[in-house]
Length: 115
Image 1 (cartoon, helix red, strand yellow):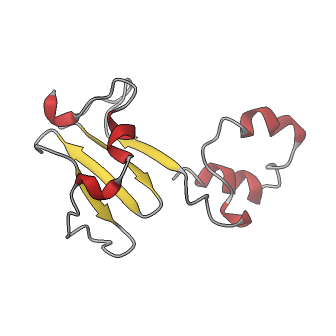
Image 2 (cartoon, rainbow, N blue to C red):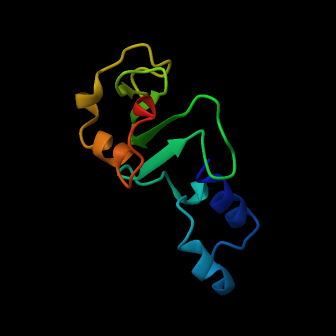
């Protein structure tokens, strides 16, 4: 989803316009017309925000094919390699996701299962 807006802007011929250059820096995504996103891109995700409340908070982090997430019903983080396990059937354990746990819990986010 991060790459949709940049790709649409590119399709419309607006991506390289000088007037968009300041705004382009604020977008996390890249145009899919210009190749794949950087493999090292880290994306924090959640179903809760200041605008939208949620009945069951969950959040996580993705980088490359690794996805770390947890919900309020969980007792720890879950790690999946979505490239080799797209249905997320084999939990690799939080340690398999390396530093993604630190990223997920950073900036005061904590964990959804400790709230």
